[in-house]
Image (cartoon, rainbow, N blue to C red; front, side, top):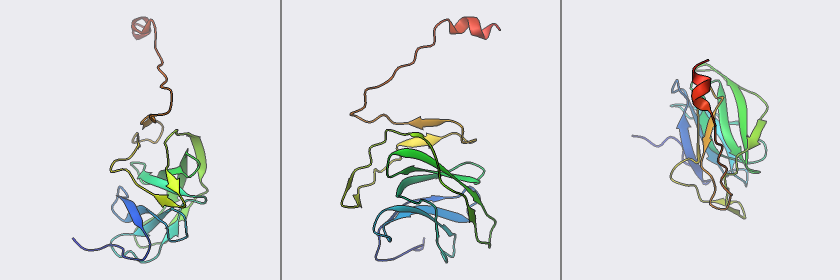
Amino acid sequence: PFPFLQSESHEEEGKFSPDGHWMAYISDESGAFEVYVRPFPSGEGRYKVSTAGGFQPRWRRDGKELFYVAADGKMTAVSIKSSAGSEPTIGRPEPLFDSHIEIEQLTNVYAPAPLFDYDVSADGNRFLVAASKTQTPVLNVEVNWAARLKR
């Protein structure tokens, strides 16, 4: 083991890209938590991914997209084109849906949970999101599903 990044800021929630060449993480170096990526293992150079706050970055299995929860609670996707040893091309953040994940902030202090509040399918098309304690749960019931199997 070796320290990857040491600074005066708080860096947390590190996630390796599927190819192992990049590390996505959050940092409060700008005064608010944002999502960044850095090359691994060198750590030289940093690239900001989020534009208005972000938490809990996760990679799509092919490494071409990074998801995160924006400060406003929206699940957000950003395309990332990269190869080992080159600067990544980072797309514009695209809000996908309201995640209903509670991001507790008090004067830009974030207390990360030990586990992520969501997971994403390998193709990036489906999300499993933990419901907040204050949110009224929604239950969708599929009726007559057995008849659909026969088609």
